[in-house]
Length: 493
Image (tube, rainbow, N blue to C red; front, side, top):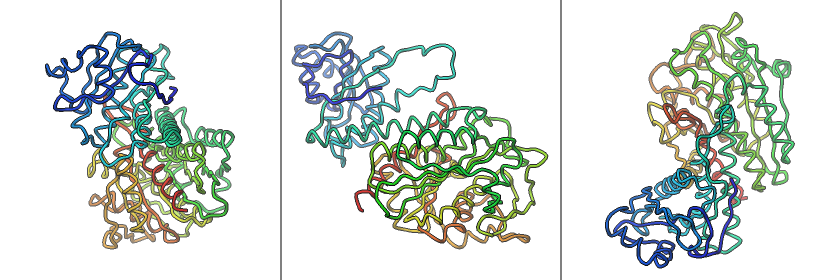
């Protein structure tokens, strides 16, 4: 999909599908007014009849030419001046889907010129690209038959009320983030027999070749030498070799880096603590944290962010087998702390704890780990928000604000000392689970024992990283959140 700006007015633009906004209370956006004049008041009449009410996300195609446009698509944008960020993104996405339903190969949208409450015109343009790419994304590379329908191959956006340079910067940012989200989706949507730890390592190395990113892949012998007993314990039941992938992007001299640590379990059967068979195929998505880290590294390099960034991806499969870890086994982590494994399906925290300890050597300014860690987070927050827990209030606040602004929300949960006692073990320094109560929090409490050397935040993305049902597939979240967080950090240095 190609994206560009246009300075032409709606009545001058040649396109297969021209997209203009309609407001509630029978109001026409400026672009809609321009087309309405060409059509002799036809749009105003349609609105007056109530054929479209202007509610956010409503669409109505006019299957006739208007000026140089082959057809016009009316899109509801809510009350003028009151369009909320989430409503705006939904309207843009619905418009892109409707254009695809019309078999248009080119589209031109003037929705970014409509004011969004508490957001700048640059934000509207950037999010128009992200929402359009998200709506038109299809993972069909493994299907032998071509797609059932065509979709737009190019999109023009009417330049919003920003200077030319700012509008182009916003467009470029939107393209970088949209492509990163699609990259994360592609990785996560691949089946476990294709997206293995070795495949993730290959993708990281290819990323390093395309961009100025240093990549180092630690193999089993390297991790054994270091003493990564927790990570390697998870890998004992699989024939696929575990990897620790390390990426370094340097955009700001010798400044302390931000470190992102992404859980990369490329298939999680639960190990000896076997999961029930229903929906187990979705456990290929247990590497969405890893996909997020690789995608964010790509976007940061594409945008040439003036920031130093480290990406750490511990990756393995979690399978049962004769060599697999068992409930009751005790392992020694890279930190030297011992862990009693009471449930082998609580494996994500085991690979993350060694990765978090390894991250200390980079002397990071802050560390954020991203993981599809607990089903308890899905029960608590559903598919709307990820869970946020942190040992640093300021860092947690930064991430929360970034998520709100990017419309990629998270929600803070407590990390009180009182929860730590649930991890007590009679035989080791700690257990790897804390019981049914507060499962998301006790998982974060476990990780917190390996993060005392730096400001740290944990994002539990189990509920937001992928969808089930007829829309099954990866979402690419929380790439937009993390990119907003990093851009704010970059502006503050």
